Length: 265
Image (cartoon, rainbow, N blue to C red):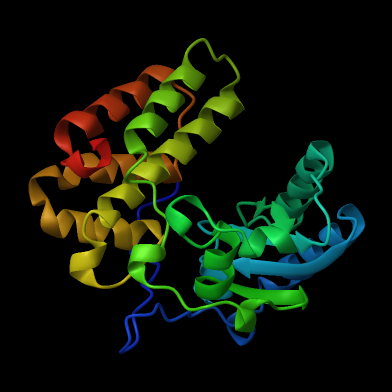
């Protein structure tokens, strides 16, 4: 069981209101560097046209916690490509067995064109956001200097689509007997809820984070009466269950108890 622990950090804003990135290659902790190297080699072997590898999250900020953190990574290539799912699973099994303190490696990517492609309402792309505010390049071309800085209003978040996301999660759970799939769904939706709780107040806080504990901590300061509900959501994000009824009950409880009205407009 992973205990809820005060860890993680915020990204602050500069005097012009732009998000200040903390990720830096020099901050990668000694115990996590071999996993970074293994991940780079995995991409080299499995991504044709590879141009860049980035890491983000706690490892990129030097804040990784053993038996709590995973390694968030992504690649950029010069042409569209999907990583073989079996190769990804084999790599994750290998890494988790060799480095037992690491919970796994997130594998995904995009193309150079996807970095500059705008999203709905002309917002920057997900890769623009990740590279400019949260990630450090550990292999190949670093695109960060070519990208414009970002303000809070330009950052994506799960809040506005939370109602739809919860509905999708329930549909995916209905009749699902795959225990590992159910646990993955549990982690996915519970993280969305915890981050939505922070997103309600990020403009008031004038800072940004995806780290779960800081999200929970801000939420409970604004909604102390609902802190226990959000704490249980956070617990399930860290310790996913394969019991469908437990997940659905907590999803319903979050809707009823947590004031996420802005997610339903």
